[in-house]
Image (tube, rainbow, N blue to C red; front, side, top):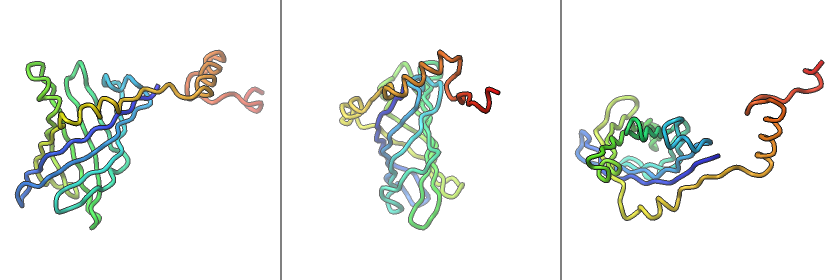
Length: 173
């Protein structure tokens, strides 16, 4: 079962040169729907923009979102991108979910932006409530195609776990 959704966060970074707008739009995906409860990280793809530095930079492979709900009450975002000069930018941010203010805490992402491994500035990004309908419509849970399900059933009947190779004639002897 695969889970995907899309989200856009936008706001600012407090830099040595003053406030700069910063935003990213991501698609989060996990091969396991239970990732939404913190059992596994969700991979991220998308684009990031930083005012005066880069527009629509591709988020690099290895980006992830860890959802620690409901037990840990945090969402952690880790993403990287490069500017046209080749400098590596990394953002590490957290939504601290508070039961006393769930709306504000679920829509506010605070973190640090790094340039080439050196802290560049503190960031505060917001999920814009006017994008909520599109966000909710973006959620997808897919079961895979029919041949995937057939293969999984056959593997279970043979006593093989997911991801284990099937025995061949050479390995049976």
